[in-house]
Image (cartoon, rainbow, N blue to C red; front, side, top):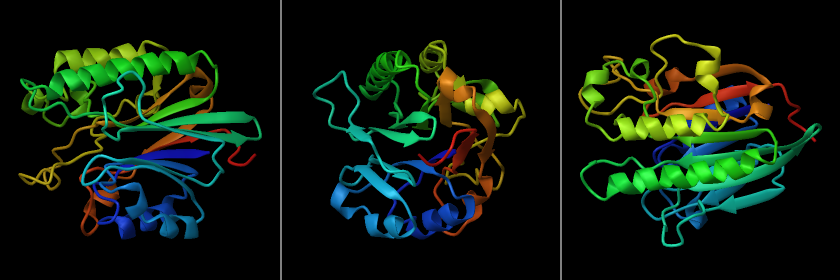
Length: 264
């Protein structure tokens, strides 16, 4: 089973790229972020024609998450618990059945948090605390669980080409990184780092200042695995070449291969 995440930075602008990548990589489940449209504007028919079931939690103009799955959904839940006044569309959770039981996948678009001296940074940290509380509950189910998405977190200095550029950024502040480690300390595995310690494994290159041409990237898109999922981890990939396509997202797809049947 191949599970992937991609911040597409507007699904309607990147529809052709997304469909091309699906055909190339053939993921079984994909978590999409920053779809930037409401549910009824999501190009559902195009993905259904490509063989995917579609679950959407959209928002007008910005944010928005979705899941594409070759397997039928047993459950779909939207909205991160813990704050009834939070109306931003940043969380979606699905459950699918395989020949070895269920697999639970959470798609997240974690708040950016910049500028850190505004209310945006406490919102980011609060969101991360709510996510940790939910993950703690889900881990008690002892199921294969994947939390995939744009975390807007640079975990370690080696996850940036030039860490000095990010020292005052909400993505790299000590409290941000500590909150991410707190998630991992629940028993989650960072899929990419479980397979490779290689430098240069970036998932985002800004549109500005020639970041792509200079390979001035950062790794902020992650797949975190429960022990029951990590036990089945076989391979990971970062499809960096997608950043060179025409009209690209500033993020690229990241995927993990699990030794689980992709069919019930």
